Image (cartoon, rainbow, N blue to C red; front, side):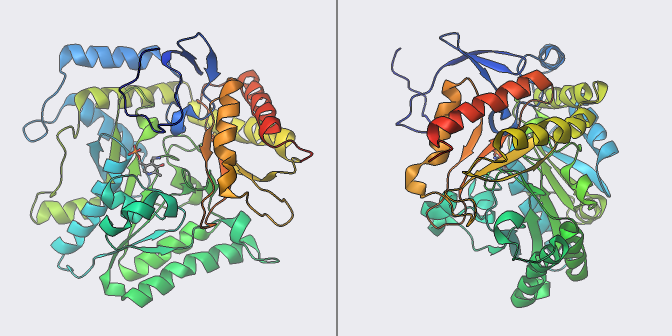
Length: 446
Ligand code: PMP
C-alpha cells in the first residue's frame, strides 16, 4: 500500500481502507466485511447504501448545488426546517442549518449570549455544563464540554465555563439512595451553582439528554431533567440540549428529550440527521429567542460559508422521510428493549469485567471494570477500550471505544449504536463478535 498523506486520528495505528458500504456493512480494500455496530460514531442510522438518500443528493446537485444564505434561502432548507419544526418539542420554531455537531453547539452558545444581550441583560455571560460531557471540538464547544482528557492540553485557550456533576447513576448514586432522590440531588447542583455565580449572570445550561461520547449512552434518571427545566425557568437561564449524538431517533424517540418530558430553549442535532450521507447539523431555537433577535437587531451575529447548504439539506430531508415512511424510530424503540437490552444482558450481564449495561433504543453502552463489586475501573495505561476496538475489528465488528482517563473521571466503555435497519440476526451476530473480542482482551476468568 502506498504511503498515506491523509492526517490520521492515530499516527501509530494504520487503518484499513474503506471501499464500499452495503446495508449495515462496511467493506475494506481486502474485501473484509465489518458490521457497523456503532454507525461510526452514532452517525450511519440508515446503513451505507440507502438509495433514496443518494438519489435525493444527486437530484439536488442537478437542480442547485449551492446558493449562499447571505443572498438566498432554498427549497430543501425550507422543507427540512418545516419537517423538523412540525415534530420538535415545546415551542422550537426556527432552524439554523450547519455542517456538523460542533458548529451546532457553537451556534447555540452564541445565540444564548446574543439573546440575553438583546433583551437588555448583557451581564448574563456564564455557561454551566456537566463534567464527563462532550459538546464538540471547536474551542467554544470544547470549553463547554467537561471531558478532562479532551480539554487538557488546550486548557489555556478555553474560556472559563462551569461544570456540575453529570447524572451518572451507576457510578455516583449513593448506597440506599432512590433513583428519584439521586436525580433531584444531582439536579440541585445546578441551583447551587447558579446561586453561587449570581442568578442574573448565568446565560445557559447545556447538557446531553443521553450522554454519548464521554460516558457511553448514559440516560438521566426519571425526574432529573424536569427538575433541571424548573431550575432554569426560575432563574431565566436558557436550557440548551445537545442531541448531536442521541437525537434523530437514536434513542427510540425522534428527539431524545421527548422521553424525559422536557423541551429545551435551544436544541442541537447532527450525526443521524445526515446519516453520514452529507455533513449536516442544526440548531433549533424557541420562538421567544428568535423573536427577541428578530425584534431587536434582526441579525444573528454568526455564520459559516456552508450554512443551509442545499445538498446537505436535501440529504437530511430524505433521511427523515425514509425514517418516517418505514417507521424506523418506532422500530428502534421496540427493538431497543426486546433485542438490544436483552441480547447485551444475555451475552455480557454476567461477565466479571462488565460493570454496567445502559442505554435506550439503539444507543447502548457497556462499561468495563477491573472489579465488578467495587466498580473499580481499569488502569487507563492498559488501554482496554482501544484493545477491544481492535479485537472487535478483527472479528468484523465496528464498535465505538471510550478510553478511561487518568484523572479517574471515567473508566473504559464501548458504545453500540447500530443502524436502525439492523435485523435481529445481524445484532445477534454483533453481540457474539463483541463477546469473542471481549474474551480475547479480558478473559472472563482473569
Ligand atoms: N455534541 C455531542 C453530544 C457529540 O457527541 C459530538 C460528536 N461526537 C459533538 C457535539 C460534535 O459533533 P461533530 O463531531 O459533528 O462536530
